[in-house]
Image 1: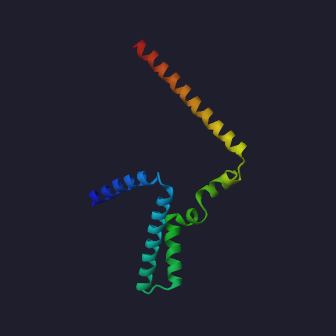
Image 2 (image 1 turned 180 degrees about the horizontal axis):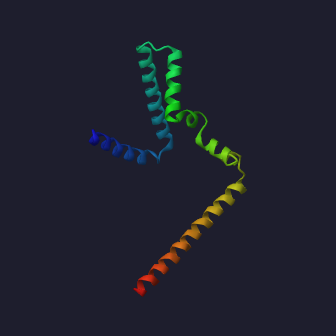
Image 3 (image 1 turned 120 degrees about the vertical axis):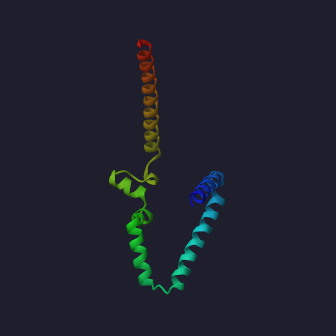
Amino acid sequence: MRHIIKFFDYLEDRVRSKLSHYPIPYAIIGGVGVVLFWRGIWDAADWIGMSWQMSLLVSFVILLTTGLFVSFFVGEDIILTGLNRQKKLEERTEEEIKTERDDIDELKSDIKEIKHILKEFNKTIEAKK
């Protein structure tokens, strides 16, 4: 069983890396997969005679239990921006996005400088030994 999981994990990584270069075909293939999956679930529910009420109840319990209900229907980004009192990316101005990008670049530069200082410090310690 572990070999099968490992194989599909490897296959998924390879296919995803190839398809990520072609977003439109990737979206079409993904859309077909999702629609066929839900069609299969729908037919299975009909086959066992599940009513719409039972279907709603079971799906609600599954989605709440797995934590997917809110993230799927609302989206994690919307929740996080609301908690942090931030604007959604679509609502930000170009200037705000540029400022944020500049801040990130500055942090990266600071981290590189700290790395350099630590390397020099390590060299000094090693030389004293």
